[in-house]
Amino acid sequence: MAVATPTAQAAGTTLVLDAQEHYYLPTVGEGPNLDLGITASGGDAHDVSVAVDASSLAGKATMVVTGDCVSTGTLKVRCDVGPLSGRASIDPFFLKPTAAVKAGDTGAVTYTATASDAATVTGKTDVLVGGPKLVRRPYPALNGIAPGAVFERTPAFANTGTASADKGVMLLVQESEGVFLARDHSNCHYSDGPDVGAWCRFDTPVAPGAAYETDAPLRYTASKDTMYGYNTYVVWPVGGTAPDSFDPSDFPATGTGAPLGLKSVASGSGFTGSGYGTFATTQHADYQALGDTVEGNVGETVSITVGVRNNGPGRMGFRWTDADNSGTYVVTPPAGTTITGAPGPGEQGDPGPLWNCTPGKAGAKSYTCDIGSTDFRPGDLVTQDFTVRIDRVVPGARGSLRAVENPEYPNRDNDAANDTAAITVKATGSATSSPPPSASASPSATATTNPSGSGAGTSSGTTTGRGLAATGADGVLLRAGTAVLLVAGGALVLLAARRSWPQGVSGR
Image 1 (cartoon, rainbow, N blue to C red):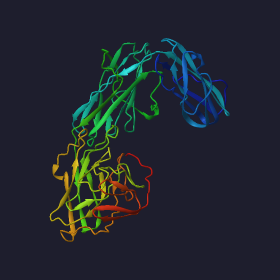
Image 2: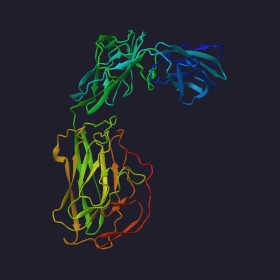
Image 3: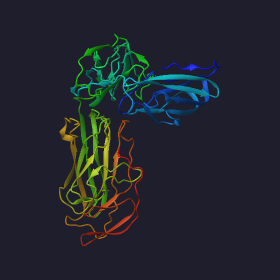
Image 4: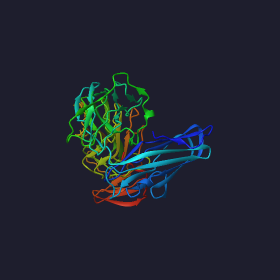
């Protein structure tokens, strides 16, 4: 925290500036966003404003104003906070070096905070061009971890900058949901909530070219339902720019064991800048295919609901990756029937989830549908409604629904017996019957996700999209509304339709 000096003594409310001690400006590229906070202590403050002045860097840097601040001159901004109760974070600007700047140049950013009912306070951040640059060693990918077992990670970093981190470094570790960090070290502060981890301070100076790793590994335990996850960490110089998301108040607990230290290691090409690594356990998830029965008279169009349930015990839980789904399921209609409810890719009603099946046309021999949730928990259910026309009776006809794993993130299903379910037919009519010439084709096709729990990435409850019909071999689509179609000489003829455009479509 930079020193915030009151210019006059005032009773009651006081302002406290919370500014970083150092700002390190690279010689190329751009610097980080300036980290600045202000607190009203002892009561509320009004008409709060902070003037920020970096004009000492004229000729060495240019300023990019961010947040709600406004430029008031070259390398100067004003940030109007207004009424203030407690603490507010300000995101005033970041700096870019000029062509004339060189490593070792210095300057300062000064602050003046005012309010209508509190004393003025000032503060300062020292600027150094170049400075330390801490790059991290990636975590290796870990596989084959037993459910509930302990595994270890060792953070490591190197200073590739031009100056020493002479006051030491800060370490922030984070992890995905379902992973727990042991509270082993007295110089580390631990979160009470998920996904945050801990931060630790090390007073060891880190000279340019030096590299260090922690002198003991961090110990993690994955919950028994976790199948996939990640660990990550960041480091920065003490007094330097902290990550945007870092708030020390999120870490109320202190470890009780021996302090975590640093030990010197050889620097080299392994320090690529990313402190991220994935892991996979041996836990599995049993996918149960859910079929249905096409029941009605020849010529009728009826609805079926098919899908997949996760019977556990594993949770897929990889919404932090770029994966699109937790697997797929292939729907094949029974002989003698035609799936007619098939809107085009990305089309849907409102309300209602995205149509997650391909191809986007009626009459296909089969459809491949996404298990769209990437946090597919035990008990969660993903379904799709189809409308099916009964064209004729085919004795013994059976379609199918088959669950298929995502090859990049397999669910390692150990019960293949329930991966496929039948889509049966109970049709009334002649085995040679055909649909009447005026058969209606105004079906609906909707996707539904119905979890048993409250897992993120899966909608709660049952949501159903509006009717979306598709007709014709060329996949011409009718959006929700009334569509009347006639069959004449094997061709579908459109008589009337009312368009209804989808709104609020979202990918997941």
